[in-house]
Length: 430
Ligand SMILES: NC(=O)C1=CN([C@@H]2O[C@H](COP(=O)(O)OP(=O)(O)OC[C@H]3O[C@@H](n4cnc5c(N)ncnc54)[C@H](O)[C@@H]3O)[C@@H](O)[C@H]2O)C=CC1
Ligand SMILES: N[C@@H](CC=O)C(=O)O
Ligand code: NA
Image 1 (cartoon, rainbow, N blue to C red):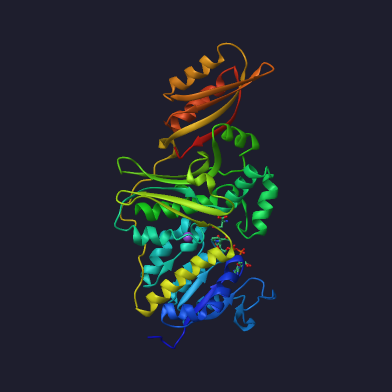
Image 2: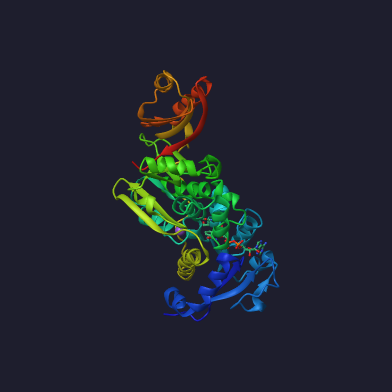
């Protein structure tokens, strides 16, 4: 039966995502009411620039005082799509204190302060939902939190940043320059307010922290995630990748150790075979593999960024949270009972593609091979190309620990015959 008193929703932030949330709340109002069992009313919209014309939003609802809005006391749900740490964190905790549940898209905040925010939600008997925070429109948080709650997840691997996938895809497929591709991603609403978060891997690392925490029922913070961005990926790297039948993607990889006693989480560019499903993820799309004991391998794929796709995830959470309000229930909170330590990057085991500039003379290959052997890193293939007394040597290893590889590279740099290490890239997905 439909309740007549509307559920009151406040929107904090009306940018790329917020404006789409407001639009869909209006255009789909009847369907949302039918699905929830009560109408949903936009009770206030906090913005930074009040003079901006916002189509479809009653100017009487607009305020620059987000704090007063969340303190009203009559709100059922606060949707936080401002981004960043403050004032978002204080606004969310204030919303809980004043009786509202919260839907957020803020991965940076959740990766840093997720535990405290979950605790605040629990203390006040309210919900904290954030499907939009990881991989945009793709349902991933809810499947991990709910659908896979009876299984044991061992690995989560994928592309979780739309901006960098868009840039890498353009560089690979059209030869576009980095800045040109980044400007386009920004204009399309994919990039963070400060795109450094995207290109330096902070955004993907925040998402990896959130995914690892939920998947492994443990606490993983942004600082626990090893991070390398994609700003150093060059056209030459793409050429090398192509010669190996690979492309380059920025991956987030969260793994449970084989003995189950610890986890790792990392973000870095990696070569993957063109035959791997992740290689064909184009533009701002994301794709994530989840591997678990009982289910085996699952793949989640879809738009990972952009106003409308992200608003879809926010609206899905809004419906879920509103339903919970009507039944005086709350959804699952934080599950961190496993309390697993997060191991350092040195313990991660994978394959490597190393490109060296070396002197083109007899014995160099043997010297280089000896260094690899001394560090216990087994070589899979070597390719050498000579040019005017110099040569480029490309070594692809078998699986080795990151610590052994780091030791190998340090020793290689000390060889007189090695002029430089042109690039080191991990090889995944084989
Ligand atoms: N754009 C995207 O594709 C996605 C964004 N997100 C997340 O959604 C959130 C919002 O992102 P966007 O909409 O892209 O950013 P945006 O920069 O377009 O929008 C944020 C809005 O908040 C406003 N704002 C800033 N401080 C405020 C304050 N104190 N009070 C009221 N309004 C304030 C800004 O003026 C701006 O209009 C961020 O946490 C972002 O990481 C998540 C998934 C995808
Ligand atoms: N900047 C982010 C937005 C979505 O999370 C991205 O590009 O993925
Ligand atoms: Na999502």
